[in-house]
Each structure stands twice: as structure tokens, then as C-alpha cells.
Image 1: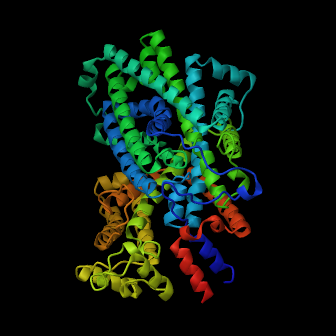
Image 2 (image 1 turned 90 degrees about the horizontal axis):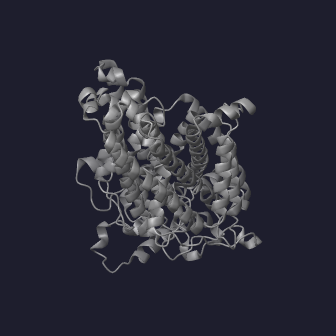
Length: 620
């Protein structure tokens, strides 16, 4: 027990929130002279939108559009619309947290650190590392495949003949490795140069898209739709392609990792997330429609359908133009995946959760140089040694886990009334003591070791009974521990329900009474949790943007992403589990050695009130 309590205290410790113009904490390396703190704040809203669009409209457009079209025909537009709507919902959750804590460079990692605690934040950060590293490798491999297609597959033949198989790949992919290392050099040159490079790639990609749509108009054959219909495989065929279409939107969340480099993060990051998701949806839908009006879905025999539609017509020049656009788009997607990786490493190193050497910031370029170099080298190694399909699924599981936790963090920020935000809770006696300020209330909390409302000390069952037996009074709410029980119940019920839906989806569609009976308790549990959350008061803290329809929207986001996670192969889950075990060992080592978050470097007036109370309890 002597080790358990300190460990739990560290694991549940939360990070202070820094708003615009405030500095959150110093880098642990600064005292050693290893680097200077402070990213260069030079990214505009346009730069962030370009980063979000470029990270999606690469592999998502030139690979995923063909895959969805082959399975759903022109009805694939519906798949992208639904997937885009789901991504927009996740983007709204990111936007609220980005506005709440804009001065962060760790994306979902930092959001969970602020709202949940250190251990959960480390799990998310460790998952983001594998997501971004493998996402970079997957985009580099896709770029190499595009070059191979442009060369009429001569590149692959030469490498197979003279180099041979290498680990999990048919040959040593030199192009993929060179792309990762080249982008590493670009990123170490400074964020402004990197953003300019990304903007140029996206501009070329936009021009190529316009050329594709214009040339596709000349190939439109209305009889294709007349013969095959809008949904050649039925509406269910379009629904089945939603997970594939959803992969095309992965990447917009990297905008949230630019909080310390954006010029006005509290406004530009939320706006950039919405705009990038909207633009990506419009682009995907337009390309699917034009592609399926120019070529029958059953004739799309490869993943490079956008190129093949002109190659089959022997439009040589247009084929090479579209291929060039594919290379630029995939280059931008690779850049978009690699860009946030060193920033997550840097944020975790600042907090003492991994080696402090990754917290080194180049004094002249204002970039995390060591973290960037290591990130690029690891991505290059993965690109030449792992199969593309496994890469894609590993990216999915890390991304979906982050989306789930971000939605949960939104619920926590809305319904949590601990010491750090109890002043936002309307109290029953606020009318009787109007002169009592928020500071007086907080002093009373810290001195008495209790909360404003005595009802908070009731058992959870009594509180829930009071919530449903009568209209709740303004001050009735749950403690953080009780709220955690509610949210864990929600995630557990959604996980089991999703697993049943994935495994027995066809049987449920046929109306099998036994499977539906097994599913109903978990659906009922989700509905009960939603009803409980609807009855609870929400805090009044403002952050510039607030997600609408809480709790329905965050609950929908969690269910949608948990369902997609359950549909992944067991091999992916095994590899992800091994990675998480390694991460837990790393956390144990560094949390014991360094003590986790470097709270000593935070000013006294910026420490979280929760830690202040914990310190007072220890003195007692």
C-alpha cells in the first residue's frame, strides 16, 4: 500500500490549463541548457486548414475513393457523406477542447491530461505515437506504389529482381524510406518552411483535382447510372463501405497538435478543424461522382482508379498529370502524418513521461530536432518492413481510440465539478449569500476538504434515485469518481454492444430473437446512462466554443468509433496490446524516476486546485 497510493496520486494527477498568453510549464531540459523553450508562433488559419486538408486528401483520395467506388458504385458518395458527418462530430469535440486549452502541442494527449489524468493521457499519447509513425509509413508506401504505377510497374520489378524480399515487404522500398527521411529534413528546417512546403503541395493537388473533374466531364456516360443504378449493391453495400471511407478522414486531428505554433490557437484551431473536414467531404463526394460517371464500378480493378480511368482511354498526358497530383497529395499526406509526431514526443518529454532528451528545442529553428529525427527514422524503418494493410489498421486503432477519449473528455469537462471548477456550479445558497465570491467559495472548499453541496456526500444510488424521482436542484451533481463509474459503464456497454453487432450483424438484420435479447441489456444500459447525464447540471465554464447537444453528440461519437474499433482484426488488437504493454513499462519507469509532471516549474497561481487540496490532505 505504501507504493499504491503515491502511484494512484501520480496516475490521476491533472495538468494545469494555460490560456492564450500564458505559459504552461517549462521544459525539464531548460535548466540543463539543452534547449530553449518556445515554438515559433507563425501558423495562420490558412496554414492549419491546409495541414488538415493535406493530411486527408492524399491516401484518402487516391486510394480510398477507388476502394469505396468498387464496393458501392456512385452510392459511395453516401458512404463519404456519413463518414464525413461522423468525422465532423469528432471534430466538434476536438474543437471544444482545443478552445479550452489552446496552448498545447500534444493534441488528444494533452486534452486527456487536463481533464482525466496522467495515466490515461500517457495511454493516449503512446497510442498517438504509433498512429502517427505508422500513418507516415503507410502514406510513404502508398506514394511509392503511385510511382510504381507511373513507371508501368517497372520500379517494383527491378527492386524484386535485384533486391528481393525484405521482412514483411516483397522488396526493400527505397522510395518510401527516402520520402520519410526527406520530410524529416524539411521539418527540422523550421515550421514556417514546412508549412510553405505543405501549402505548395496542396496547391498542386488542387489544380490536378480541377483537371481531373474537367476531363471527367468529357468521359461522362449517363448510361452507366441507368444500367447499374445509384446503389448497384444496394444501400447496404454503401453502408458497408463507411469504415473504409472513414479512413479517408483520418488526419484532421493533427491540427490540434499545433497549439504552441498557431498565432491565435483558441480561434484558429476550432475553425480549421471544421473547415478541413467540410472541404474533405466535398472533395471526396465530387471525385466519387465524377469517377463513377466516367467508369463503371466493376471496371475499377485496382486501387489507382483515378489514374486508370484515363489510362484505359489512352489519355497519356492526363494520366501523367493525375499521377503527379497523386504523388504530391501523398507527399502532403506523409508530411501531415509526420508533422505532429515529434510534437507529441516533445509534449510527453516536457511532462517527464518519456526521456527528457526529446524535450530539446532547437534554439534557432524552434523545432524539436531530436524528436523529429527519431520520428523520421522510425517511420522509414516501418515503411520498408511492414505490410500496407496492417499499417492501415494500426493507424485506425490508434486514431479511433483517441477519438473516443476526446469525446469522453468533453463529457468530463461538462459534468465534472471538482475543486478546479466548482466555482462554476450554481449553489442552492447562492441567493442567500450573494456577496460570497468564487474565491471565498474555493477557500471554504480547501479549508473544509469538502464541496459546496452536502448532497455530494450521498451514495451514488441515492443520488441517482433523487435525480429520477424529482426535478434536480441546481447544485446536485456527481463527484469525479462517481462520474467515472458512469462513463466506464457507458464505454463498457458500448463495447459489448458493438462486438455483438460486428459479430452477429447479419443475424440481427434477420430478426434473430436470441441475439437481439442478448443485445438489448447493453443498449438499455447506454440509454440509462444518457438519461442520467441529461438530468445532471452542466458547468458554466466557457471556452469560446461548446459542443451542442451534449450528452447525445459525444455519446454518438464514442459509439461510432468503438464500433469501428471492434470491427478490426484480432491480429491488429494483439499488436496494439503488445505496444501498450511496452508503454506501460515505460510509464512505470519514468513516473518512478522523474515523478511525472514537472509541477515544480509551474507558477503557484497556475497549479491545479485539485493538487492544492491533495497537498493539504497530506499535511493533515
